[in-house]
Image (tube, rainbow, N blue to C red; front, top):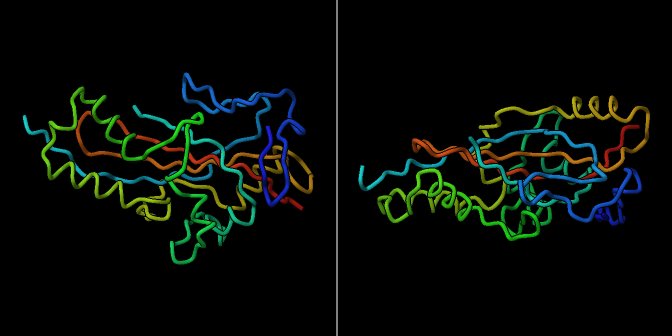
Amino acid sequence: MSFYIDGSNINICDWYDGSNNTPYDCSSNILHLQCQPFQFDVAVITQNTPQLTLQTGSEHIYELDIIAISESIFKSIFYRANNFSVASNTLLTPTELSYISFFGRAVCNQPFSLIETIITNIENDLNITQDMFTPCSLINLNKLINSIRTIADLNLSNVTCSLTWSEIMLTLFAEFGNVTVTPPVILTVSVVFISPTEGVKPVIIKFNFLTTITLN
């Protein structure tokens, strides 16, 4: 399986044993690589969504298909200093914003829609259809979700937990030892959409960034 990072064609299986062109177990929506790069979570951002009111009075996890990215662009977006912090829209270039966009994404090679994902899971969790919500509550939900085009549009004060860049480096040193550049690794940034509506489970969208990191 090959990806382009910094203009170079990176074949994961050059580092890891085995080969598999299907990166996900689509039946369970879980990232699954036979030649599995080292993967770990680097941050979780929480976004609250508006209350939905019925006229009549566990979590859903989506692993987005792998996004190949250079170390320099990843750091420009998330680590301009040692602490994790998403750069604002005004500081990011259109190219950088494209890496963290919810649009044009896929899950198991199938197109992903944030608004459809949120509403479908609400319907399934409550065993109802969206026409059972008051028009205003549904309008408010659509307005919020449609305003979120990239991770940079989220409420970035709600970073629930994260690693510093120093901690990422220590993790990679522990995993790979004294190497100049790591094999391809996957750094995951999760976005959690939490609804105050009773009975609606959180929706977790995982951005899986494939990159190599310079250690020395």
